Image 1: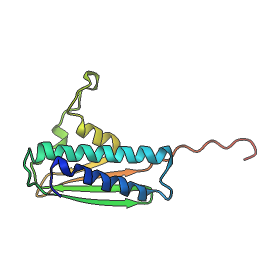
Image 2 (image 1 turned 90 degrees about the vertical axis):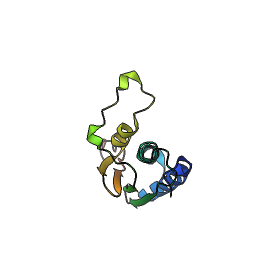
Image 3 (image 1 turned 180 degrees about the vertical axis):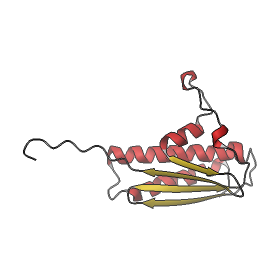
Image 4 (image 1 turned 90 degrees about the horizontal axis):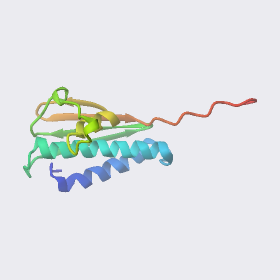
Length: 141
């Protein structure tokens, strides 16, 4: 697909659907939180590569590989735009409630993130479903 905002919906629909494959019965609050965080992180990644990597170009290619597994998901995003060093991006000042500059922070908060600058740039996002803590056994259990 192309690295344009009009293609973001395609990416997010595919990622959302793949999240359903990470659980036998995709339902309940654990799965909903998992899906929401994965979709949010990928949305931020795609926005960043469109706005910063391709900077308004409409011909930039994006390759997406989605690997759902029992209990988790791995997503690879490859692009040929301008790369960056995530370690050089300052943390946002959360107290100031910024309207922009939160994308990398959101990705790293919601998922394990690895980035390799190069040709192509490679962003890998991973997440496991964190099941709710089971209730402690009561007397006689």
